[in-house]
Amino acid sequence: MPDEQTQELISQLSHRKLAFVRRLLRAHEVPVSGTRDKLVERLNDAVDEGQITPDAILALLNELDAWGKQRVKLARFEPRFLNPYRNEAEVRARLREAGMEHLLGREGIDLNPPKVLTPMRIGYVHRDGKRLLQIVAAKTRFVDRPETDLPELNVEGVAVAEGEIVDGIVYKPFRRERQKVISFAEVDLGTGFVMISTTLKYRVNYRPEFDELLALVEGVVPLRSANPILLFRAVHEIKQLSHDEVRIYSRKAESPTGGSVDLRSHSSKTDLRLDPALLRADNLFGNEDCVHCNCRWQPGSELVEEVHTHVFAPAGEVSVLGQVTEASARHVLQRIRALN
Image (cartoon, rainbow, N blue to C red; front, side, top):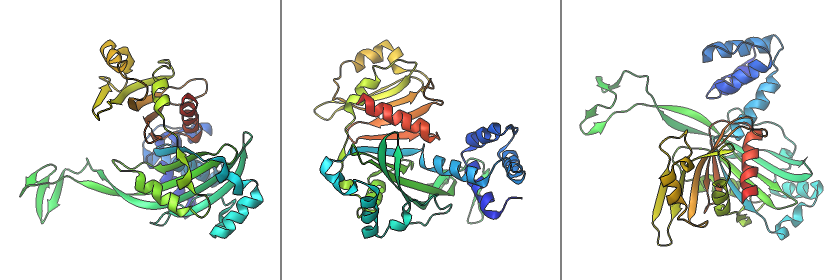
């Protein structure tokens, strides 16, 4: 039986990430059918037998915690803000002043982070000819999810069916779950491009989530000074792409006087551009009028899985819905940037 920490790794990986557990097992020629409990059992056995290492599980968990199910803000620094980061020595000096030098080069993220956002690791990395400054922070929050498996509730000793109204109160059960929140910033020290990300939270205003990270790293990099990249052109250009590359479920346009029009396909599986009436209506609006696009990027030669995104033009933000790999999320975000 794996040690306690490895069991916690497996527990977190198998919670709402079963597709990736199956992918990991399949890569090591381990059967992938069965329930969550069966998959956990097989993963435990694979660790015991040395087929899969705890480090491999940890690396996958860290990737999936940070990428997918995320809200991303795109921005850019003016060149003058990059002057203090010309090389690793200058980056280290900046971190020393901020009291975070010990995080430079640190690997991993705490399995159970504190309740307040806490810096976990900082990287100065070279990738594809770019110099990147990466700052990763984490916290724990609790979210309430609807519970559908309870036949009845017990309120003050009285059985109450789900949805029953007692004294004007509708009783509906929720299960409180622990959620690991990963917030990170990545700055291209050559071009000034900035990507700020935080874990999705259902129906939430993300400004406080982003502000929390911005305040945390202010002594290292002044993210508040980065200019948002408005995505109006990207929202327009997505409509010009082929159905094979992207399927558009809905678009939203706003008039100069503040009115709005939502165009939505009859099915999330159907591109709204295939509906002639919706397409005619959409063509009435100019590039600057369309403020939101809900679309699914289709697998192809460079993308191995479908990626569902919401693009918010005025905010310069993109939501990546559903669990996907870092490579897939990066590919789609880069595609949106290129279109813009």
